[in-house]
Length: 211
Ligand code: GAR
Image (cartoon, rainbow, N blue to C red; front, side, top):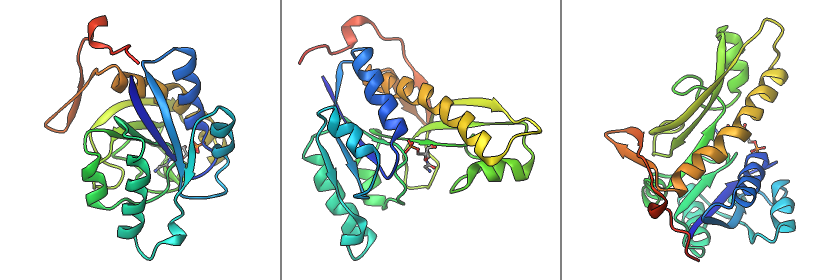
Protein backbone atom coordinates (compact mmCIF):
# COMPACT_ATOMS: atom_id res chain seq x y z
CA UNK A 1 0.00 0.00 0.00
CA UNK A 2 1.53 3.31 -1.12
CA UNK A 3 1.32 6.35 1.09
CA UNK A 4 0.52 9.79 -0.35
CA UNK A 5 0.83 13.20 1.32
CA UNK A 6 -0.99 16.05 -0.43
CA UNK A 7 0.03 19.70 0.03
CA UNK A 8 -2.51 22.47 -0.51
CA UNK A 9 -2.70 26.23 -0.01
CA UNK A 10 -6.38 26.93 -0.66
CA UNK A 11 -9.57 25.50 -2.04
CA UNK A 12 -8.13 22.05 -2.60
CA UNK A 13 -10.41 20.94 -5.43
CA UNK A 14 -7.60 18.91 -7.03
CA UNK A 15 -6.89 17.25 -3.68
CA UNK A 16 -10.61 16.42 -3.46
CA UNK A 17 -10.57 14.86 -6.92
CA UNK A 18 -7.60 12.69 -5.96
CA UNK A 19 -9.13 11.61 -2.64
CA UNK A 20 -12.40 10.69 -4.36
CA UNK A 21 -10.67 8.76 -7.15
CA UNK A 22 -8.45 6.86 -4.68
CA UNK A 23 -11.53 5.78 -2.77
CA UNK A 24 -13.92 5.00 -5.60
CA UNK A 25 -11.28 3.28 -7.76
CA UNK A 26 -9.80 1.53 -4.72
CA UNK A 27 -6.20 2.43 -5.43
CA UNK A 28 -3.52 0.43 -3.64
CA UNK A 29 -2.70 3.66 -1.82
CA UNK A 30 -3.87 5.71 1.08
CA UNK A 31 -3.94 9.48 1.46
CA UNK A 32 -1.85 9.62 4.63
CA UNK A 33 -2.24 13.36 5.25
CA UNK A 34 -3.24 16.70 3.78
CA UNK A 35 -0.91 19.51 4.83
CA UNK A 36 -1.41 23.23 4.20
CA UNK A 37 0.80 26.27 4.61
CA UNK A 38 -2.34 28.30 5.31
CA UNK A 39 -4.59 27.77 8.29
CA UNK A 40 -7.59 29.06 6.31
CA UNK A 41 -7.18 26.64 3.37
CA UNK A 42 -10.70 25.51 2.45
CA UNK A 43 -9.60 22.01 1.52
CA UNK A 44 -8.59 21.14 5.09
CA UNK A 45 -12.20 20.69 6.20
CA UNK A 46 -12.96 18.32 3.31
CA UNK A 47 -9.97 16.16 4.25
CA UNK A 48 -10.79 16.20 7.96
CA UNK A 49 -14.40 15.23 7.23
CA UNK A 50 -13.08 12.20 5.34
CA UNK A 51 -11.00 11.15 8.34
CA UNK A 52 -7.70 12.13 6.69
CA UNK A 53 -5.11 13.56 9.11
CA UNK A 54 -4.52 17.26 8.44
CA UNK A 55 -1.77 19.63 9.52
CA UNK A 56 -0.83 23.25 9.02
CA UNK A 57 2.76 24.43 8.72
CA UNK A 58 2.37 28.17 8.31
CA UNK A 59 5.10 29.90 6.38
CA UNK A 60 4.37 32.97 8.51
CA UNK A 61 5.87 31.19 11.51
CA UNK A 62 9.32 30.88 9.94
CA UNK A 63 11.97 33.49 9.27
CA UNK A 64 12.92 32.26 5.81
CA UNK A 65 12.30 29.64 3.14
CA UNK A 66 15.01 27.33 4.44
CA UNK A 67 13.48 27.14 7.91
CA UNK A 68 9.96 26.78 6.57
CA UNK A 69 10.95 24.02 4.16
CA UNK A 70 12.77 22.18 6.97
CA UNK A 71 9.66 22.30 9.17
CA UNK A 72 7.43 21.24 6.29
CA UNK A 73 9.72 18.34 5.50
CA UNK A 74 9.63 17.16 9.12
CA UNK A 75 5.83 17.24 9.08
CA UNK A 76 5.57 15.42 5.74
CA UNK A 77 8.07 12.74 6.73
CA UNK A 78 6.08 11.86 9.86
CA UNK A 79 3.81 10.10 7.34
CA UNK A 80 6.65 8.36 5.44
CA UNK A 81 5.13 9.10 2.02
CA UNK A 82 6.03 7.28 -1.18
CA UNK A 83 4.65 10.29 -3.05
CA UNK A 84 4.15 13.98 -2.28
CA UNK A 85 1.43 15.65 -4.37
CA UNK A 86 1.38 19.43 -4.75
CA UNK A 87 -2.23 20.41 -5.36
CA UNK A 88 -2.43 24.18 -5.59
CA UNK A 89 0.48 24.49 -3.16
CA UNK A 90 1.56 28.05 -3.83
CA UNK A 91 5.07 28.14 -2.42
CA UNK A 92 8.46 28.29 -4.11
CA UNK A 93 10.44 25.38 -2.68
CA UNK A 94 14.15 25.34 -1.87
CA UNK A 95 16.52 23.06 -3.76
CA UNK A 96 17.33 20.79 -0.75
CA UNK A 97 13.60 20.24 -0.15
CA UNK A 98 12.98 19.37 -3.79
CA UNK A 99 16.04 17.11 -3.83
CA UNK A 100 14.78 15.20 -0.78
CA UNK A 101 11.63 14.25 -2.74
CA UNK A 102 13.30 13.83 -6.14
CA UNK A 103 11.35 11.44 -8.32
CA UNK A 104 8.49 11.25 -5.82
CA UNK A 105 6.90 14.70 -5.90
CA UNK A 106 4.29 15.71 -8.49
CA UNK A 107 2.74 19.10 -9.29
CA UNK A 108 -0.09 20.28 -11.49
CA UNK A 109 0.26 23.60 -13.28
CA UNK A 110 -2.59 25.31 -15.18
CA UNK A 111 -0.82 25.75 -18.50
CA UNK A 112 0.87 23.76 -21.22
CA UNK A 113 4.41 23.96 -19.87
CA UNK A 114 6.93 25.26 -20.69
CA UNK A 115 4.53 28.05 -21.71
CA UNK A 116 3.11 30.35 -19.05
CA UNK A 117 4.97 29.53 -15.85
CA UNK A 118 4.19 31.38 -12.63
CA UNK A 119 0.90 33.05 -11.82
CA UNK A 120 -2.08 34.28 -13.89
CA UNK A 121 -1.59 31.58 -16.50
CA UNK A 122 -5.05 32.03 -18.03
CA UNK A 123 -4.49 35.76 -18.49
CA UNK A 124 -1.10 35.00 -20.03
CA UNK A 125 -2.76 32.59 -22.46
CA UNK A 126 -5.46 35.09 -23.47
CA UNK A 127 -2.91 37.87 -23.86
CA UNK A 128 -0.75 35.73 -26.15
CA UNK A 129 -3.80 34.75 -28.19
CA UNK A 130 -3.04 31.04 -28.11
CA UNK A 131 -5.74 28.81 -29.58
CA UNK A 132 -5.22 25.94 -27.18
CA UNK A 133 -4.49 26.03 -23.46
CA UNK A 134 -4.44 23.34 -20.83
CA UNK A 135 -2.70 21.85 -17.83
CA UNK A 136 0.45 19.88 -17.09
CA UNK A 137 1.30 17.27 -14.45
CA UNK A 138 5.05 17.08 -13.91
CA UNK A 139 7.67 15.84 -11.50
CA UNK A 140 8.99 18.69 -9.39
CA UNK A 141 12.56 19.89 -9.83
CA UNK A 142 14.31 22.93 -8.36
CA UNK A 143 13.47 24.80 -11.57
CA UNK A 144 10.08 26.47 -10.88
CA UNK A 145 7.23 25.05 -12.99
CA UNK A 146 9.58 22.79 -14.91
CA UNK A 147 10.47 19.14 -14.52
CA UNK A 148 9.77 15.90 -16.36
CA UNK A 149 6.27 16.02 -17.84
CA UNK A 150 3.90 13.16 -16.97
CA UNK A 151 0.71 14.31 -18.67
CA UNK A 152 -0.68 17.27 -20.61
CA UNK A 153 -4.19 17.89 -21.85
CA UNK A 154 -5.65 20.73 -23.85
CA UNK A 155 -8.80 22.83 -24.13
CA UNK A 156 -9.63 25.07 -27.08
CA UNK A 157 -9.47 28.82 -26.48
CA UNK A 158 -12.50 30.43 -28.09
CA UNK A 159 -13.08 34.07 -29.03
CA UNK A 160 -15.52 34.60 -26.18
CA UNK A 161 -13.29 33.13 -23.48
CA UNK A 162 -12.49 35.20 -20.39
CA UNK A 163 -9.96 34.49 -17.67
CA UNK A 164 -12.84 33.04 -15.66
CA UNK A 165 -14.23 30.78 -18.37
CA UNK A 166 -10.77 29.55 -19.26
CA UNK A 167 -10.00 28.83 -15.61
CA UNK A 168 -13.21 26.82 -15.33
CA UNK A 169 -12.44 24.79 -18.44
CA UNK A 170 -8.89 24.05 -17.35
CA UNK A 171 -9.86 23.23 -13.77
CA UNK A 172 -12.41 20.66 -14.98
CA UNK A 173 -9.60 19.11 -17.01
CA UNK A 174 -7.26 19.13 -14.00
CA UNK A 175 -9.80 17.19 -11.94
CA UNK A 176 -9.75 14.44 -14.58
CA UNK A 177 -6.05 14.31 -15.31
CA UNK A 178 -4.39 14.74 -11.91
CA UNK A 179 -5.99 11.64 -10.35
CA UNK A 180 -5.04 9.69 -13.49
CA UNK A 181 -1.39 10.74 -13.26
CA UNK A 182 -1.19 10.06 -9.52
CA UNK A 183 -2.68 6.64 -10.10
CA UNK A 184 -0.01 5.88 -12.72
CA UNK A 185 2.64 6.73 -10.13
CA UNK A 186 0.97 4.58 -7.48
CA UNK A 187 0.83 1.67 -9.90
CA UNK A 188 4.56 2.01 -10.57
CA UNK A 189 4.09 2.86 -14.24
CA UNK A 190 6.21 6.00 -14.44
CA UNK A 191 9.86 5.89 -15.40
CA UNK A 192 12.04 9.01 -15.75
CA UNK A 193 14.91 8.73 -18.21
CA UNK A 194 17.05 11.70 -19.17
CA UNK A 195 14.34 14.17 -18.21
CA UNK A 196 11.53 12.39 -20.04
CA UNK A 197 8.76 10.37 -18.47
CA UNK A 198 7.81 7.04 -19.99
CA UNK A 199 5.06 4.66 -19.03
CA UNK A 200 5.88 1.04 -18.69
CA UNK A 201 3.37 -1.75 -18.96
CA UNK A 202 2.33 -3.03 -15.57
CA UNK A 203 1.03 -6.46 -14.72
CA UNK A 204 -1.23 -7.17 -11.77
CA UNK A 205 1.79 -8.65 -10.01
CA UNK A 206 3.52 -5.26 -10.02
CA UNK A 207 0.75 -3.57 -8.11
CA UNK A 208 1.10 -3.94 -4.37
CA UNK A 209 -2.30 -4.64 -2.94
CA UNK A 210 -0.95 -5.61 0.48
CA UNK A 211 -1.90 -3.59 3.49
C1 GAR B 1 -5.15 24.81 -9.75
O1 GAR B 1 -5.63 25.40 -10.92
C2 GAR B 1 -3.69 24.44 -9.91
O2 GAR B 1 -3.37 24.00 -11.20
C3 GAR B 1 -3.02 25.75 -9.59
O3 GAR B 1 -3.73 26.28 -8.52
C4 GAR B 1 -5.09 25.82 -8.61
C5 GAR B 1 -5.45 25.20 -7.28
O4 GAR B 1 -6.81 24.88 -7.22
N1 GAR B 1 -1.64 25.55 -9.28
C6 GAR B 1 -0.67 26.40 -9.63
O5 GAR B 1 -0.87 27.45 -10.21
C7 GAR B 1 0.74 25.94 -9.25
N2 GAR B 1 1.72 26.71 -9.95
P1 GAR B 1 -7.34 23.87 -6.12
O6 GAR B 1 -6.82 24.37 -4.76
O7 GAR B 1 -8.82 23.97 -6.18
O8 GAR B 1 -6.81 22.50 -6.44
